[in-house]
Length: 66
Image (tube, rainbow, N blue to C red; front, side, top):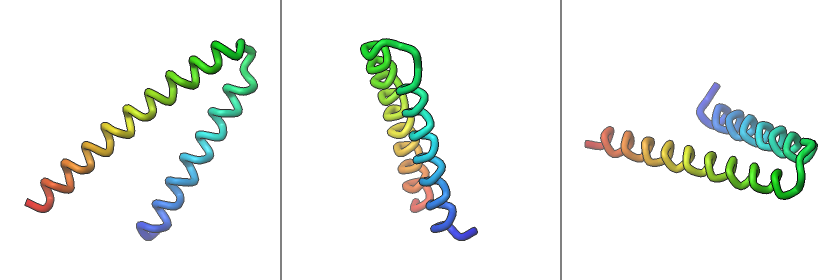
């Protein structure tokens, strides 16, 4: 598989996972406040992981260009 196809597959997997998580949150037997807190916490966790991953990839790219 070429890099474009792999990228598209990765994006599709992320979208599918996000949809599954959203459906799970919306169908969970919790109050609205608890659900919103859980979504906010999960979003912060994902944002932190993505920013760390982005920083790591940026460092790797810079190391390759040296």
